[in-house]
Amino acid sequence: MKNIRNFCIIAHIDHGKSTLADRLLETTQTVSQRDMQAQVLDDMDLEKERGITIKSHAIQMNYKEYVLNLIDTPGHVDFSYEVSRSIAACEGALLVVDATQGIQAQTISNLYLALENDLEIIPVMNKIDLDSAMVEEVADEIMDLLGCGRDEILSVSAKTGVGVPAVLDAIVDRIPAPKGDENAPLQALVFDSVFNPFRGIISYFRIMNGSIHTNDWVKFVSTNKDYHADEIGVLRLNMEPRKVLKAGDVGYIISGIKTSSEVRVGDTITHVENACDKAIEGFESVKPMVFAGVYPVDTDDYEELRASIEKLQLNDASLTFEPESSLALGFGFRCGFLGLLHMEIVQERLEREFNMDVITTVPNVQYKVKLTNGTELDVYNPSGMPEPNNIAEVYEPYIHAQIITKADYIGPVIKLCMDKRGILKNQTYLTTERIEITFDLPLGEVVFDFYDKLKSISRGYASFDYYLNGYQPSKLVKLEILLNGDPVDALSTLTYVDNAYGIGRRMCEKLKDLIPRQQFDVAIQAAIGSKIIARETVRQVRKDVTAKCYGGDITRKRKLLEKQKEGKKRMRQVGNVEVPQSAFLAVLKLD
Image (cartoon, rainbow, N blue to C red):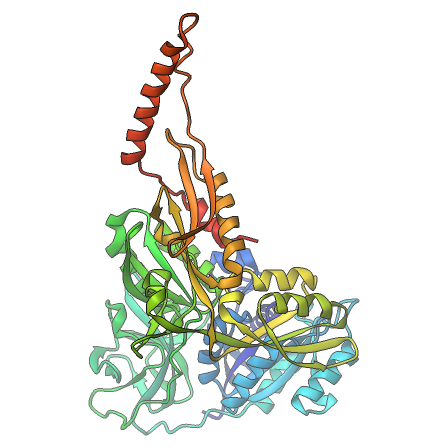
């Protein structure tokens, strides 16, 4: 055990975690030159296309006589749950900071996560080969943040490989070996799992105490079900079977489990015969920030969609879902996501990995409603909102947001937050050039396009991190969209009373362009309760019925027009207006 080192790499998005992981794998010759490619651990197409890490990936390396278990983690705030799980399986962390950008908001929050778990932190300054690198300034920032000496900070260029051997030596020297007892009863923490259509569910675990052999009988503590360990092994570039794994090792187990609900991330694996007395303190269950309905385009695919979401949940434990139904869209699921990027990624993965065509409704957050009779309700979507005359008060979730930006952009950033009903709490100059601004913001305002706007007004320099900060009373109304007098469930939203008029008007204008013309007039209305606040009309497609009437009395033309008018009226009564998927998506991107 004294030769094992378990560590993860944490950083803000785009600071070079995956590239540094590539160099470590190359230096230790874990990956041959033939198999080497950029971001070798990012095995999803989506990760390669977007250049971001979505999943944490575990891999084992050999360096001198040591075994190094690396877990590469995502950097985006929407995937911080992945980071917390990786940290629970490690003793140390490489904190990577980009020498051209300095410390960003997510760097700080990931660092605090690691410190809460008593991890040994090794600061690594990356991208020192770039012309715009501010090596000394960034080194000072790291020293302020960590309280470490200048000689403890490793300067590397993950792209060119400069300074990488020093990182490996620091991992061996500074990170402690795992603590644990090989002779105690087996205790292993499940930190991830994947679904394999041929072999069932493959669980990745870290052994805290004891050892496990192939063909042992094991059980998962939370479900108390027994399984046969058909195969155990370590995670190299591919899975490599082993006969035995001991305390401190990171590995995988295949036991032919077919049902997704039987494996929970954060669960403890132990032996059936000599079971451990208590489960390992797992991770806190995740709290979703954004809720949206996910419905199959074809209602017959409902069961298939359920199976797909369950398999996806195995691999992404921060996704939560429960069944719901809607008048317009039939049966589907109310899913909870950690943010908008997370929602987008889940939708893409359902389409790519499971070939599911889905409609996603307007995202919402969770509100608390106090009724006039004193009871409290949790409202996740607009259709669950009680009638206005029964509501005493509505509470909406607020977040505590930290924004770090260049001092040049402070004006536009504060204006953006004020427009989103933010309350300025604090401003701190980190250096003469960079400032940290702290705001309390309603989560509902941040859900839509806040992050995109923040990036554009700060030219990509601002970084944003947040955590939930309780509920506060608010004036919210339910804004409904009616097509020919019928409400469209999927387009209704809960919004702040002062913004309702503007949003309603813009939604009507947008829908007018997107809903195809019918044989009859389509009235698009935005309503709050019974009060209509905006209206647009999609004009009908008309045939020129009077074309064959030339000459003669006007009554001949009038008769034909009246006949057409009657037909149009009858058509409107039975006509159905289909809302295209593009309309749902366009409403999400309202400016």
